[in-house]
Image (cartoon, rainbow over all chains, first blue to last red; front, side, top):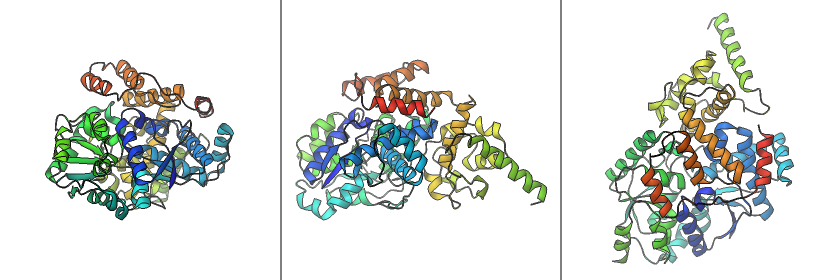
Length: 280
Length: 186
C-alpha cells in the first residue's frame, strides 16, 4: 500500500526520531511512504491564530501537491493533520477559497486526497492481526499509557477513525507489541501545545498533571503520536524522569529493529533503562 | 425577554458580526447567540484556570456587544485550540474558530493582553514566509531575544542542539508560492 507522506517541520528537527522511526517502521509494515516533493509548513497554530485565509492556503498547497502524486496523505504530526484536514474540508465547501489557492499553486483542486493520521493508517490499513504475526520481541512487562492528546480525535470529523473521548487504536497497537497498557483518564487531555515558549508555566503545570496521572496509573512510559505532545511532555516535566516515546518507536522495538538506539539517543529523558530491559 | 432587550441583543450581536465579517470569507457563521451558558466549554477547557474571562463568559460578552473587554482579554490568546469545547458544545458553537477570529480582530486593532504569545505567532509566520518551512532554531532565538528571556531554557536548548534536534541551517521549500500567499492574504 502506498501513501504520500507529509512529515511536517518537526519531524525534520525537534521530532527527528519520530520521522526516522516512522519511515523505518512503515517500511517494515509494508507501507510505502512517498514524501510530498517541496512540501511547505502547514502554518501550525500561528497561521490559524493570525490569518485564517493564509492557514487554509498553506495547508492547501500540500494537499494539491499530494493530489499530483495521486496518493492519500499520511500525516504523523497531529497538528499538521488537523490543519490539513481543516483545509481540505473548507476547500471542499468554498469555491472562492479553492479558486484563490488554485491561482497561486497552479493545480486544480479535486478533493480526491484523503488526509489520514499515521496512527489511522497503521491501525486500519495494516491491522493488528498482521502486526502480531511479525512481532519479534514482545515487550513483556513494559508498563505504558497511550497519550493521544488533542488533535488526533478532536474535533470529530465525518470520517473520524477513532472515538473522540475514548480512543482505542493506540491501546490496541501497544497491546499487540506485548506492552502492559494501563488505563487512565488523561489520554486526550491537552499538553499546552504552542504555549511552551510563551507561557511556559502553564505548560509545566499541565504536563506535571499528565506525568503524575501516568505514574498513578502505574505507567513507566508515556507513548505519543505527535511531536508537539512529545516535546512538551519531555521538555516540561521538570526532572520527573518519565520517558516519552513515539508509538512508531515502540513498534520498531517490538519488530526488533536495529536502529532503535539511534532514535532513543535523541530523547531528552534517558531511555537506557528501557534498552537494558529489552536486551535482558 | 422584553422587545427592547431582544432588540438590543440582536443589534449588538449583529454589530459585532459586521466587525469581524469585514474581510471576505473571514468567518463561518458562528452562532454565539445560541449559547445556553451550560458551561461545558469552560468545564472542559484545559486553560480556563489561567483565563481572565472563561470561554462561556466570552460568549456572553459578545452577546452583550462588549467588544473592548473581549479584545483586551487574555482568554483569546491563551486558547490553544485543543478543540475540547468545540467537541462538547451542545449548540455546536465553534468556539475555537471564534477565538481565532477574535485574535485576528485584536491584531487589526493593535491590542493584545498577551504580547509575547502574539509575538511568538508572528515570528513563526515570519520564518515560514522566509523559508517555506519553519526554522526552529531561528524562531526560538529571535523569540528569546525579543521577549528578553535570553537565558530561560538555555540548558534545554543546548541539550537539544547537541542531540541534533535543532538544525543550524533552514530547510527551504515552495518559497515562491508561500510568499505569494503571504502577499495575497494580508
